[in-house]
Length: 332
Image (cartoon, one colour):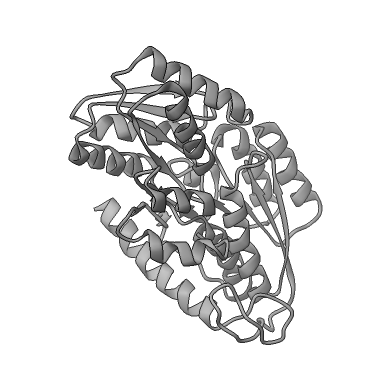
């Protein structure tokens, strides 16, 4: 029942977001084209300040998509948005504290390492600043003190990927984790292992901030174990690197991934990558900002006490051409 209610919530919110985005422009108060091509105006509510703090690592294009959604909502809502990212939890906590000290009107934060961020969320609550979580912290956001969550159930997404691997006849899967201790990434691979009953799954930890090392590590593993016939990565840049590693290793393994970017969409079109599990980061960024604006200006909350799911959905050869049109705009 919980998963069903989440999906209902997600569908309703996606519909509301689509209508809102279609009716409002991205900046400035003058009609102009948005990413979707719609034209309209900016909210006339008082200008507010919102801080968005993520665990983004340098060079990960996933966050560019998420940020574009946040900026579109900020422009539409007359919000002064301060976006910052820090891969280390301690640095992320410091950014949240700085936002509190500066007296922002709302904070949106990822909780990939929720234990380290919970005191910061609670400090914001004590200061009377509303907090929403997104992208990371699906199981932890309520205990941390956030009033809402926008993202996907990473364990459920992993299970969906594992079930698909069964259908495709894989027998040995390598699940590549680019950041050890990241609860969402660990949950993805755990979900894959749970649902993948055709064979076995092995986790491979790599240093996500060092892409040449990632390629070398995957290449070495494939050379050591020719039985691996599927490589599942947890981010688009790592999938593209895994494609190179498969070639370097002389392996016949196929590559699938979680998350997308423009280049990854092209790799699906060419057949280099089988499919991607899409959590719609643009929507996560958009809803995180928009929900805080709705709360501040009209007392609204989203989700009914449950997480608002933005995924998972599959992008593959059957729908990639349509998605490519949006990816070209930097929104998928």
